[in-house]
Structure formats: C-alpha cells, structure tokens
Image 1 (cartoon, rainbow, N blue to C red):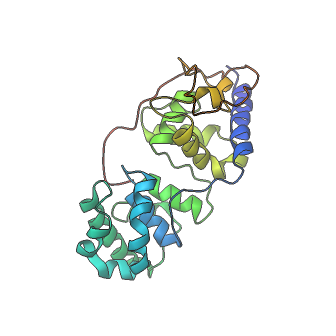
Image 2: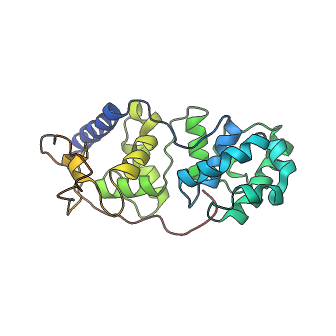
Length: 248
C-alpha cells in the first residue's frame, strides 16, 4: 500500500462526507462554552438525545459555573436522573463548576490540560470543547468514531488513544476541523453498530468491511451507488472502546 494512495482515498472519503453535510455541528443543545462543556460531560455513556431532554430545564436555572456550583450535587440531581451514571455526573458537574469559579474566574479554559483537570472531563470532552468553542482542529473519539475508524480501516486501533493518533496522522488538514463531527454523524446514522446501512453509504466502495449489509428495510430509500474501488488499508474491526466511566 502506497502512502500517497491511502491519503488520496482518505481525502476522497472526507470529501464525500463533506458534500452531504458541509458544516456539521454537535447535536447537543448549548448556549455557551460552559453549557457545552456540561452537556458533553453529561453525555459520557449516554445518548445526545437523553442529554438534550434533561439539560434545557437545568440550564434555565444554572447556565454559569457560579450558578451550577451554588446548585450543588443535590440540586443538580433531579434534573439529570434520566441520564446514565447521573449520581456521579451530578457530583462532577458541581465540582467542575466550582473549580472553574475558583481557578479560572468562571471561564472555560482553551487548553486541553487545564480542561482535563476538571472533574469528569476526559480527553474526548476536552477535544469536543476545544473544537466546537475554540475552533481547534482536534478529533474527539467517541464510540461512533471508534467504530467507524476501525470498520472502514481509516485508523484502526485497540483503544481511543490509538484511533485518535491514527486519525490525527492521516486526516488531511483541510478536513480536520469537522472530521470528528462527520465521523460521529456517519456512525450514528449510517455506519451503525448492529446493521450498517451499506446500500446508502456514500463511502461504501472505499470501505473494506465485510459482510456488507445487502438490502435495507423498505422504509429506507437507497441512494445511487458510486463507482466501485476500494480502500487500500483493509481491516474491519467493529469493537467499542473498553471500560465504562463517568469521564468522557
């Protein structure tokens, strides 16, 4: 496999995803850097949909670190009980809010190391905030990105760190700003875990995954298929990142 060929195919891969959605954005609801940080932290081992059902009422009364810290774990808990690991997340949200007040003047820092010092904030959450708020070309790896990167052969890896490093090396600079959003949405709606929608996938011919889903349910209308080709980095792994934590 020639490196230049692989990069050409990766460029084509993201070009097709970009053609479908030129300006992808997070599906989490937020109105400020702090509310995005809170929403992303709450989304660890949970769906964006479940977080979006809980946060509007919470943010209506506590949309700043000071207000959230004053609310405290007990005050936060009733608003997020429908989200997985809600007890731990309530404690973390109150603690990170207090730390933002005490150490950062109530301002979300634009630094990965400082973000990861906050309770409940891991590398993925930090990368999402850096990308969405501060426009850093970071690539956050969640379960969808992990699956797509392995299944398509874009950046195979046994853990999220390997996948992130692989994506950072191979994704062309011009695509990095939106890369993780494209991969998240592709994994959420097309390259799904149990039944990938191969017949309507815009990069099906670039993906080595087998066996491909041959026929979609009647409710799904297949799109026209691109010309056949093939990724020159064949490896199909569809595992999920190991471990369950309330730190994203």
